[in-house]
Length: 450
Image (cartoon, rainbow, N blue to C red):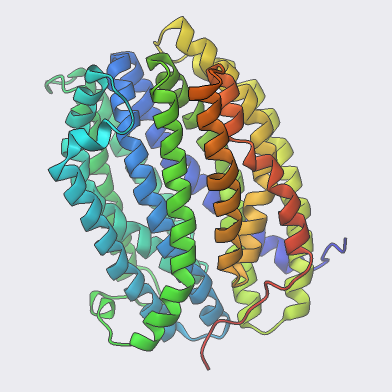
């Protein structure tokens, strides 16, 4: 395997990667702060908020799909220096994200209990979840706009603003969580509802920071409110052809992740709490792989847009080696952090034992994910082949993983740790098609219009 000697590539990749990792660490630290504080308030409040966050995860995955299409297409236009087209792609991404946000808002407003009962039969968890959902639904359109603006900026390699946005949100969220969950500094004790209110305010702060940056500091795109409206329906068709497979893939991944809670939630209440603890820490360390995928998609898209296919192949080979090192680091770090993090939670001993077992499984799954996920969603999808990832996930997740996990839980009666192993098995076996697909280089596609 040829490793590139292009020093500019390494500077660009690790610059993008480090900022994206830090950004995602801070974003997930907000969730970790919610979990730890709610876990110290009550286990029911923790489980209720965790159940609502499964809906938030599906919603955010759909936004990632819409934003992913904007990043891939926008980065190719950016490689050609055509910023007017980048802004038009971004405007369609924003309008589509508002439509998705409206669907989730209406569902949360009209049938909150029905949504939560999909995940658990516990009346106490549903009651706490409804309190959380009653407030958090107002954050959906705000979060949608912020996410799309950040994705548009990512396509032109402006990623540092995402770090500052998330840092501001973390500070606001932790301070308000402390006040509103436990009733400190003269505030009422609100529990799960307080955590939702703190998150809502943090989302508003995020949006204000992004808008301020666009108006006063950003010089590459000069994106303004008037740019949201355009009648370039030809570009809309191109954007939608690319984004639809990504949105379906990421949306189905979000649904499959939510179904993990459904499967575990119908086993024991302790399994829900343990899954919340384990997946929160796992997601925190997963950011290294997410950062790899994000950096790969931008660099591959830009290089294809510049018409340098030889460099595209060279960079793809080099990135695969980087992904392997990231995977090893993720697995080892997760192994040594699991005990100290679990000790922060005030949950039952049964839940702590299950969380420890779940994390041991995720140590192995995380190493596989660190290679296959950025290879498939970063290099291959970033190169323009979005349908391949959709087909792969339909077969692996919906054809193998979820049916196998349901059988393990409800037919064979296997313990929760075995179910978790089934639910994450695809992170390992998807490495095989990933290495075959990426090294054939048939995924390199120029998507931009002349």
